Image (cartoon, rainbow, N blue to C red; front, side, top):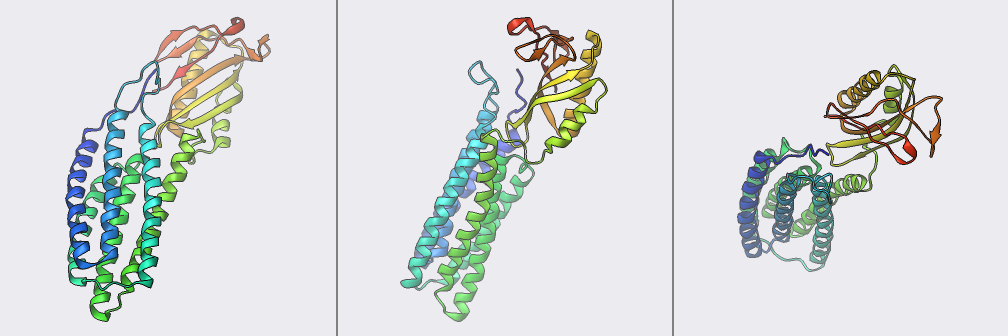
Length: 324
């Protein structure tokens, strides 16, 4: 049993730095937002509270992912990051709804805002959120970090919109610009969070990786010399970047050494062309007696280069290969 996720020191340091910076900005945005009577600015404070929680949740998830596998959790805590991203996205949807409701109410009961103060605080937010988003960008291949990256990128754009709104209010004195901006911010939050909800739910429900073409994968295995047929093929994601495969592969009659070589060719194809590093493959010989619908394979298990013979119920063997 092997877990490929390891603690990432750089990722943890960036998340710590981002947490501290975001906490300071939340206090400043809330204080000056109330002073300026700006709902858009107060909305930004609320959005940054969700960002702070998202960063904290992601930090805990990164730490959990580095914990070793156990007999109770044989894949370790690789899914912790996926779960964190799912919770983050749900909180964003709730936040977007709250901002939208508050903005609609302000259309009916307008409040005069202080645009200069509003723009000054928003400008600081653009710098802070842009910096954090830039630091997180190189880790955005991980769905956990990508959910936080989208938080921060959305904040950068929305605070930029607050600056433009402040300019509009300063020159036109139209107070409806502030709640309109809040509605735009809410729509941006909803748009960015929905894609994360869909992706994380797909992973949690053991869906086939979206980037994978199962027809192409099946053909690639069946085209390997010695393979007759592929069936009972399952592929799922442990995380957004880690995929696993289990399958029965029907093969021609062959010697034990040939079976080991065939497994290596299959794993090479899966690893190098499809990015699948964790496989469990059961070889079955053609035209052989079957027990419970399975044939007796010719080769022993091969795990990390070591032979391991395992007999299943009825005396038939199972071939397992864990590619790394």
